[in-house]
Image (tube, rainbow, N blue to C red):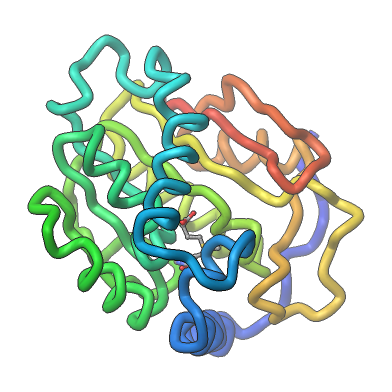
Length: 232
Ligand SMILES: C[S@@+](CC[C@H](N)C(=O)[O-])C[C@H]1O[C@@H](n2cnc3c(N)ncnc32)[C@H](O)[C@@H]1O
């Protein structure tokens, strides 16, 4: 059954503005720490190695679902919420072309600086709720990790899932992570650190509404609630 939880009543323009300004401020203070909180003082090597490790766990161990027997070097990939490029670099080492978006202009500025040696990455600051900045580009795989867990609006997350469906080729995968701990429902509605949680039923409803089959999940009820969404 779809959830009957009400959508948050926040004015979207003020929330979008707050997401951008809060993440810009975090990026100016210590982007790498706010992207990956395990350390406060990441070296280049350790930061990008942590991205490689995440790509290994979430993508390279799952190539059957991600690639459908296509050579990854022939594939284009979309990353939603790329931050300062921690995983983007690793994605560019696996896939042919990477399109990466983030709401924070400061994150994107730092990502551009760190990834300027990578010719197959295109980085965009987006509006915090959709992928119109990418036009009608078609991608073979879409990915988002530790991003939706920070978005305090069910509508915004829903919009990203619908947009991923718009850009993905039929049958392709959007693998994304949500906050699944429904006891963590934020009491401050525009807190841009603690995102809105999803139950399994919420996720299934969103998937169907956006043109996806929710084929697998892991981590139901936890912070690391992963969805395998296959484009119809
Ligand atoms: C914890 S960081 C994770 C970055 C990257 N996914 C990684 O794992 O290295 C979360 C990122 O999501 C971005 N973000 C937060 N809300 C967003 C939104 N509404 N739209 C796009 N990006 C958003 C933030 O600016 C930040 O760069």
